Image (cartoon, rainbow, N blue to C red):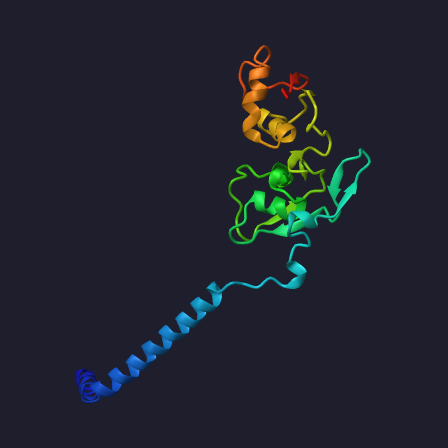
Length: 201
């Protein structure tokens, strides 16, 4: 047994340069294959035409009017596979023409943390009315056009920012609404359904 081992070691030593060359070549091939696979998998994946969302730009959203007279995107409901770098706002822009419908997507998918969506996740895009649509440089609600209103009754899901966006096209004007209604708003973060607010002009 010892003699056979010694003979093997002796023959290996005699052919050391050949063995080194073969092993070196093998290492180069393995590294080449690994690099090829790495770059192949990390290259940008092209989306097949049938996977491309039908709605990609705000101006391209085809709308229909529902029974209540509210505007709703035509091609909904549908499902969306989250792509790298997307968030609920950008997904909402694709299907609703603006990002303001992101809470509807979060609710339809029971997302506990709407700030995190994983690449490859399948999301349901619900058929709900547009929250906002751009009109003549202002943002106004389809359901209630506040661009000229002087009062507004608070509805479910309203907050001062969203009312200011609908009334003035600028969410930062929530301070003006708050100042005009200090007699009934103690905390600007808490407004109640049914409150009648003054919209200063």
